[in-house]
Amino acid sequence: MERVRAHIRSIQTEADIQIRVLLDKIAKMEVDIRDGESVKKDLHLAHMEAQSLVTARQDLTVQIQQATKELDKAHADLKKLPEMHAELDSLRQEHQRLRTTFEYEKGLNMEKVEQMQAMEKNMMGMAREVEKLRAEVLNAEKRARAPNPYGGPYMHPDPIYPPPVHGGGAYVDSYGRPHGHMGVGVAGEGMIPYAAGPGDAGRAPVPTAGGPSAWGGVYDAPHPRR
Image 1: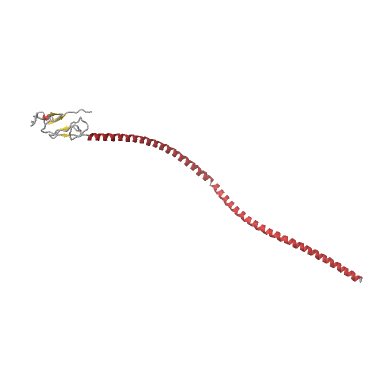
Image 2 (image 1 turned 45 degrees about the horizontal axis):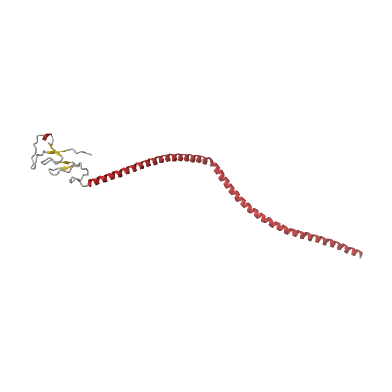
């Protein structure tokens, strides 16, 4: 019995030991399970961070591509820099030439303006002279239309011009002086009988019915001029 009891105690002891071992394993497994859940959480967070890193990488890739393009453009512009300097120099020269031309044209325009002002003054003076002459012409026309004190048909304003001679084919020239045609007639007032020319020196006076003889022509006595 002692052996059986000892054997039972040994079996119980082994069973207790195995139970304790199993309990330890269960506890460890529970700990591992809890750790696994935290690991899952950490893994999920890691996945999320990885996705954000992928997105950031894509953004950085796009930015790098844009920066590369801008850098290539800057390199191309840098290669064109001498050509741009030459164009800038040509533009400066063109600007200087245009400025010189502008100053020259400005001087010419000022001279032309002065000439035009002088011409305008001259034209104004000429216009005044024309108005003055027009007024004089109007006054002369008024005097020409004034009644003639001599009563003749020619209405000359100056009384020094005698009236036209009537009879004997007399006429008045463009200066208002009377003349007589060759023929028989009486010399008018202010006229002196004369021979028509050297060939008429021996011509006899032509008798008239009303008085003294008249020569073949008349001499227009000179009139005093003002």
